[in-house]
Image 1 (cartoon, one colour):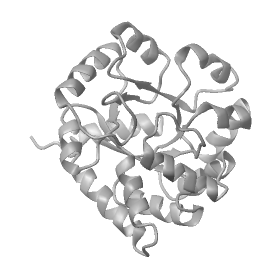
Image 2 (cartoon, rainbow, N blue to C red):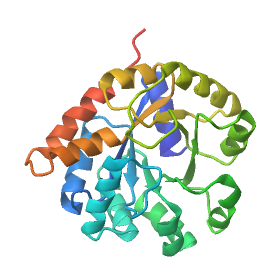
Image 3 (cartoon, rainbow, N blue to C red):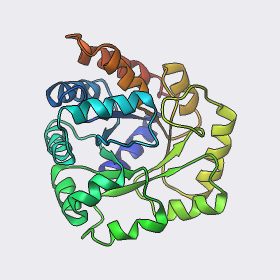
Length: 267
């Protein structure tokens, strides 16, 4: 059983939903990024999304764009992200999902990426700009199925296409809460519930909802609908706003702890 499947099954028994936390690898630098990630895992985060810095992140809002730029300024590459993954894996058993655009993976080498990522302990990959119709180029080079391919589904995705996307996915599905980019304001829980209903009818995979979720109150509301909640921009905003503070990692610890508490379903 994969670490991803095992995580969702254990959470279900405990009547909890998954807290999926995104951070850009190497922001503000590799050393402090490792400290932050360690504290976030210690605080109870269920799944880590480790963002690969990229110069043209079209799906990301300004906060994550700036985090990516800071990491790139530090010279962080996909090779460094995989090295970080190996170090993180030595200290935690939580699933690690690499979050990337396709260009860095294509340039790295498709089979080499799979081999290096799985050896480092990565559990999955989410590629923002790789639609199902074009992903065979990548997966046909993979020698196994140890790396789950996490797929994105938007609220505007028709039901038939949801089925097509879901059929090519593994691990879990990432359901975008609304149109727009990461970190944008406003959540419509009725729309989230409707999209979740259509998507769950198309797949048995767990469904995690992200984009625009930043507070424990919003986490609790979405946790009552979906199988997991994804937070990214809110964590990166904390990094950006406190980048020179010695207790930065501790601030992330407290933020994760509060959000994780909100994933516990009462009654």
